[in-house]
Amino acid sequence: MGRAFECRRRAKEARWDKMSKVFPKMAKLITMAAKDGGPDPMTNAKLRLAIANAKAENLPKDNIEAAIKRASAKDAQDIVEVNYEGKGPHGVLIFIECATDNSNRSVTNIKTYLNKNGGQMVPSGSLEFLFSRKAAVEFVRTPEMDLEEIELALIDAGLEELVVDDDLVTAFADYTSFALLTQGFEGLGIPVKKAELRRVATSPVELTEEQLEEVEKLIDKIEDDDDVQAVFTNIA
Image 1 (cartoon, rainbow, N blue to C red):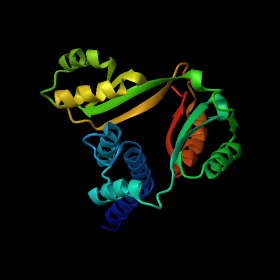
Image 2 (image 1 turned 90 degrees about the vertical axis):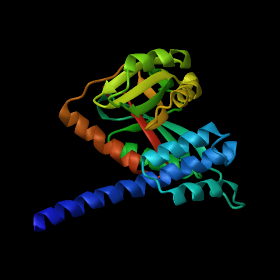
Image 3 (image 1 turned 180 degrees about the horizontal axis):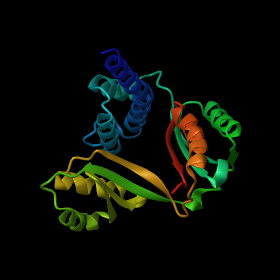
């Protein structure tokens, strides 16, 4: 009984740890979207997607509403999107996307994580051409779904490929087709688990398990930062 209790306690702590990191980041994206395009998700596609992604991460409704209201508050902080690029151990390239109200803090933190973990920051734009930007929409496959029909229906929405991983399916398109692709899913009535822009390495590298563990420590440090929204690497 004691061991079972300990396992449940650890699982609960892991969930709370994830929530404490993910929830503020999702709320920040909602605030940014509402500030850019208005507080109505029906007329603001970016906000609609930010809310959908937040719900997929179980962000409570009250938190979502508070994030939207924060966008129109008089003392609302200006949050900007900034990217940083770096090199990690073993030839790993790292592209970091942030949303921050203090870029000096963000760049200092990112530089520290890299320097202390065998990496270094590189000038902005150095790695841009080594990653392709893709629109990615995830959905859960149900028994009645015909993936071939879905694929045909989404070709006009810019679909390039469907990648199936058990019941999780990811639709990829060029980043310029992001709005079209998400609208395609809305038209088909397929619930979206997650919709985002990704950076996919054009020349992935393979690492040994030992090398991967070393790099993952660095990636974990970066991802834990409150300002960091996404981290992309060239790891295969």
